Image (cartoon, rainbow, N blue to C red; front, side, top):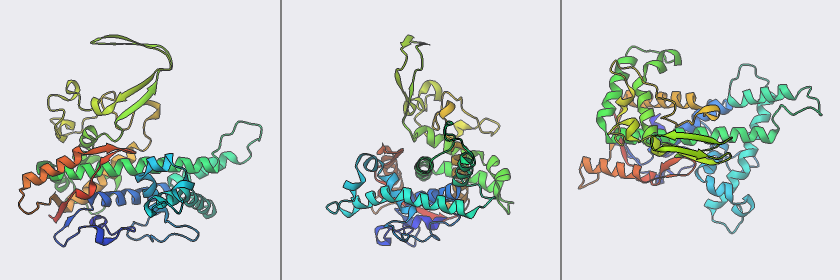
Length: 381
């Protein structure tokens, strides 16, 4: 898995990544993004190849491979959403902008090819997101009365659903893993804490399966929840009042008319001292563990990284399993620390990492603005 952090996967030029034989790298964020794409490739499309095994050459008639088109669209979502593809791909545009346009144009084409391949395979034992959608939609389509209400998804609706699943599942989990690794590099005592659990629970394990592994790695899950609390992927949620409401709080009663658009600041909610205590701004994963050492599930109204109610994120469990699996794989065998530049101290290096996390901005989800300045050293335990 550490090979994903070399910065040489995909079409990245190895010259662009500062990777040394000492384990120092500036490609950790890129590495976790590659891992997230690989997981989505398996879950969404049933593609079991990793990014290091998969060809990065574009298929016939395309300029970009589907993996590269996913990353290009997600990382440039505002441009992709607001600027017409004809403008983006114009010959007068710089190559970097044209590549965004090609990605916007070709991602749906790649998905349609995969959909056709899924239908042609007639496999009965696949359980990818795409295969489930295709089977359910096609079964509803067969025998549908043209005059009855449509119960199946059109091809464009299938592509759209897969795009939303891909964007949401890729960006949120990748950025959460990047913040987690950076925090563990800043606070080695918490690295010791999760490795104590890994050493205890994984010592005698020969094979890995969900039922015997995920439930016992509660400290890894606590780490995820604490990262999500401090670096909430979606900083606010919008909801609309369906009818007139009266809300009584300690500061008074508020009248909310019907159809009022309400913004819920999850970023503020997750650091409210009234809920989380005087150290609400501190990174302390043990707040999620009881005195007996068991994971504490938060009150559903106090912690909303996956939203809540009927529109709760359907990928919540998948994200948790993926995060725990990646943290287990990495920190079972490795330790991470900041790269200490010449003339600097380890404390100064840690403060630099904290500054990089503080310099974050919400694009699709919250992410660091300068990921290439995140220089970490990975060492075998």
